Amino acid sequence: MSETLWDAPNQQVVRPDESAPWEEGEGGTVSPDPKDSMTKDELLARAQELGVSPANAGMTKDELQAGIDAKLAEEPG
Image 1: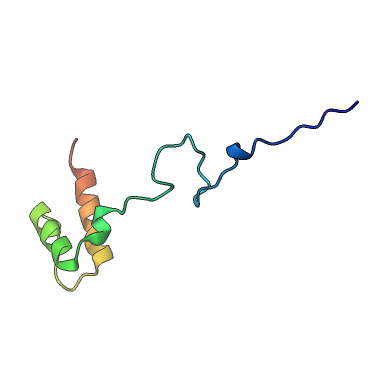
Image 2: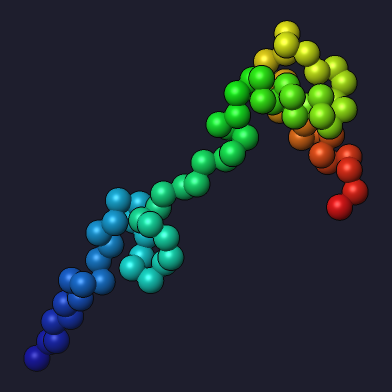
């Protein structure tokens, strides 16, 4: 006599992000990075506030963000 093993249907993943039922969260939504929502003017103001040099309106958002990140990496703690 052979025994048949059945999968438990309630254990199957049914969430869009394929997370398990015991995993925390809202089904896989990722919080956006606040830096991504900043405008170029806001990034420029933040860079100038931190003393990033150069920091001017001719720079792209990516260049400004790279300068901000580098400046913050320099600062202790």
